[in-house]
Amino acid sequence: MSKQLLTAYELVGGYGKIDILHGVSLSVGVGEIVSVIGPNGAGKSTAFKTIVGFLRPRSGRVVFNGEEITGIRPDVVIQRGLAYVPQGRPVFPQMTVLENLEMGAYTVGEPARVAKALERAYELFPILFERRRQKAGTMSGGEQQMLAIGRALMTAPRLILLDEPSLGLAPKFVTLIFDKLMEMKRAGYTLMLVEQNAARALAIADRAYALELGRNRFEGPGTALLADPEVKRLYLGG
Amino acid sequence: MNVFVTPAMLAQVVVSGILSGALYAMVALGLALIFGVMRIINVAHGPLLMLGAYTTYFLYSALGLNPYLTVPVSMLALFAVGVLLERTLVFRVVDAPELSSLLLTFGISIALVNLAQLLFTSDLRSVEYLTGSWVVGPVALSKPRLVAFVFAGALTGLAFLFLRRTKLGKAIRATSQSREVAMVCGIDVQRIHLITFGLAAALAAAGGALIAMIVAIQPEMGQTWTFKSFLVIVLGGAGNYPGALLGGILLGLIEQVASLFLTTQLSEVVAYVLLVVVLLVRPTGLLGGRET
Ligand SMILES: Nc1ncnc2c1ncn2[C@@H]1O[C@H](COP(=O)(O)OP(=O)(O)OP(=O)(O)O)[C@@H](O)[C@H]1O
Ligand SMILES: [Mg+2]
Image (cartoon, rainbow over all chains, first blue to last red; front, side, top):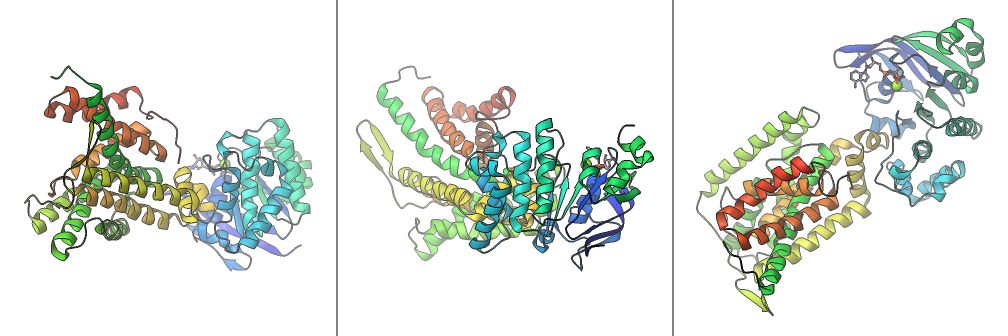
């Protein structure tokens, strides 16, 4: 197994006094794509928010790149190289595409590194270069999602967490987004994603987890989960 | 009731309206920023303006400073006051229900007014530096109002330049567009709140410093400015920064036009009526949307 980049141990927690996670463990190795699937309300987004620091776990630990990051604020976590693309269309709608990308590099000091990151984002998503002067809010959902991913690349992160990158997109964009995720893996990025589109998410995953009611239910190589009759019945609609 | 309106009167009204409108716009931009970034209506905005006016008054009367030179000093002083208020009190209600933030800033407002009454007494004070008017054709331009207009225009322009061109300014706009996304970009949102509150207080202070040379200074001068700033951001669309400029000029014009037809007491009521009408008819503001 490759070197562990992120390990979340037995996360328990949620919003205020209400626990949503009752012991979720996830790990990602360098260079992997890890998919997390599960029904609505299983706690997938909550697990990501807890890892990134939007929520503080009641118990459990998060170790990233050898350092404990449990309960550390998101704006600090991102500087350690952990990027996060929240669910929805997480862009600044009134800013141009270029400004959005620049905001992604907010914590990056040297202009040379920002220019390099910008080049990489444009290389992966040429549409962002074409649209660089357009207001993000006027773009289609798929384009906004690509912008959100492109912006996450601006810090040259070690790991990118993506919450439902294909949610609510037209079929052609769903395919495009999954193609881009594979392309990112080939380019050396490490990814962990939450997906409703379980079949596709398992197909591209090196490893995968299925969550249910705030607990781990299944885990294993993506192809193994894809072939598992129980997983098929529960998450893949038959 | 006055029914005869000559073109000269109309010209005068338009000019006066734009002159005072620029001040409204600058002061209201502060309120708009706090609302946009923190989702708080700062009821203490006007009393902060009042403190700016007193700062100018004392620098002028005690130290003999040129009152126009006191504008940046008042701004800096109130920036510090704003930061202090945010750091000690306001940060507690950022995510609380609206009523908490209204009550807290209302409390701060009362405290500031009472403090001013205690320290400065309720005596009316004035900074008489520029007086009289320049007459251009049929229009009389009050000297202190014209200079205040120039200052307000320049400061508002600078504020927009800051918001649009600098990294920190962009981070403020980003935070008002999406706090969550701002955080995933690594922006320290708490710090942005602090700076925004300071900046807003500085804009109010600039208004106070300029108004100090136009009207009487007293501890209760600020409250109507809270109200008028609120009206301006409702007119322009809450959280819409360019909208605050439009709303400010509009309010200035409407007040002046009203004064042409109505008695002084009645024209004071116009702003209140306007607020109710806009809230009923077009609650998203005249521009609508959230342009930052
Ligand atoms: N801000 C919040 N405050 C309180 N409860 C919340 C909040 N956000 C989510 N929840 C609750 O937490 C539970 C898990 O939500 P979560 O968003 O983690 O699910 P999910 O697995 O991501 O589902 P989905 O597929 O719908 O995105 C749900 O019951 C939800 O109602
Ligand atoms: Mg979710």
